[in-house]
Image (cartoon, rainbow, N blue to C red; front, top):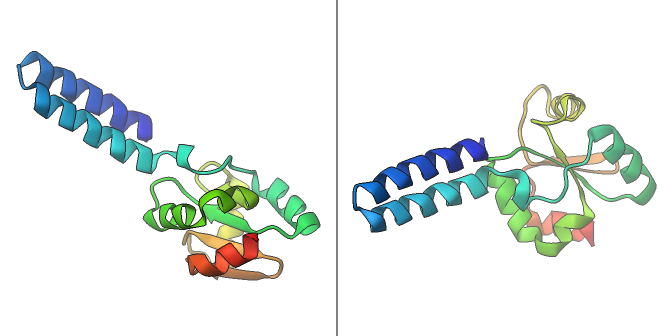
Amino acid sequence: MAWAFLLVGLVTSVSQFLSGRVLFGIFELVAFAAVAAVLSPVVFPRSTPAAEAERLAAVDGRPIIYWRPGCSYCLRLRRKLGRRARTAYWVNVWADADGLAGLRELTDGYETVPTVVVGEEHRVNPDPRWVREQVG
């Protein structure tokens, strides 16, 4: 989806440049790029498949965070965790069918993200301070 925003932004910006409205074209390109960045999984740590995340978390006790691109709450959590975000296992439920099934199991059939699992406990859209305590 992020690529689509970039492509549309590029096309509309070029049309603005060609019609002589350079500043508007630059503004449009920046706006589309910002939206693409928010929708992109690039700002998140590498996505881990659900099965691997569960296996690794059972060994080292790190949190599993179920998320999806474009989710403003996921982005807020990622931003609040800062560098600590990389110590958790991030499962992109739009890219991992097992992750989506696991999320639905935790949330009574809903797809509410972010959902954070630590050991036997899970929290839906948790306070970022709590998650920071879990990641160390």
